[in-house]
Image (cartoon, rainbow, N blue to C red; front, side):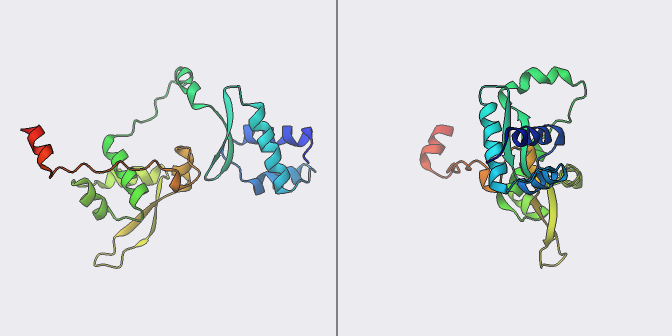
Length: 186
């Protein structure tokens, strides 16, 4: 079982990393400091840190790229005044585009346009590529060989998800063809 020193060292690594760490990375970093632990012992230490933070503003979160120490979402509003720089807001069109890619991947720009019903600008795709939320996973074997887009680990990390199956369920589509709907409209 892990010692208190090991648990505190893992906590320091998670705090100082500024990014998620995989269990294997934590093990390597511990070994660099002369601490030899197996992966199950490291996970036990992470669980102990989770318990330590249970009634605080911090939490250990497992995301796609590993584990990270972060501020609980319920405290995010009080932090907004600490940073003067405004993060660029994500437009509705960009959110629709990334949502389609996340739920329907792999998709081409044409697939996204068919679903949205409007043209998808190069700037939208470029913005998602620059944020490292999507990547090209290949090319569809049709004339023009359009790029196929999928989401990345960075997308999962930024949206606090461990894997793509963590996405919320899509609501059932509304049946606009029913007579009841038409009578409500009229």
